[in-house]
Image (cartoon, rainbow, N blue to C red; front, side, top):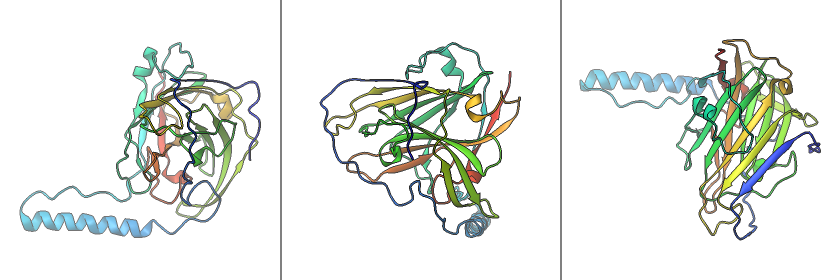
Length: 297
């Protein structure tokens, strides 16, 4: 499923050098990126949410006091207004230019299925101009893990951040990934959905290449060395709208998209995190993608 990146891609990687110790990275759980069926969820969760709501009302009426907040097991997808900004930036992985302070910020990330809090903080900044979409990832990480460097490697078996975006119908969307060693992955996904919108099976066009995309990574710490304590890694990305076969989004135009992160620390279970929780099994649940509204000027 791999293909050569080609000379048109640019990437920059900086990190503070330390002793290089390569360790075996634990394999991910069985719900990684493989085509297949998903389990039945949905109607039971709706019923359960209704019963929880009735229980809260009963407590309020009987006890005469405010009921504790009830966790929503199936919240609506998240929404963000993406600002249209102007500003010159250098793609160096640092996010130091002033325009980044005016970008929309997406945080916190939670466990994609249970919505449980994450061990680490993830902050994504998003903005656009007339030509491209800009993403800035800030990933706190005390134990940065990565060995893959080649384009379209199985980055999800280690640590990686991912962006899924559907400019049009949910059955077709782009999947982009970046890891701490400045590796990148790009694919065009076709997803078969059932009547409720849940994924039945999906497949990818692995030959797709985001030919205009540029990115850079900066690491504060060491990579693949669990003997020390790292701080964070950041990713800065520019994706021309032409890579999505789109022009500049119209004001108030809405795309669907989600942001994910695989976090792995030695001695802990892997964390599979998302901005908008999918609840249903796996990341490839486009009906659970968030709403990206382009604000215009």
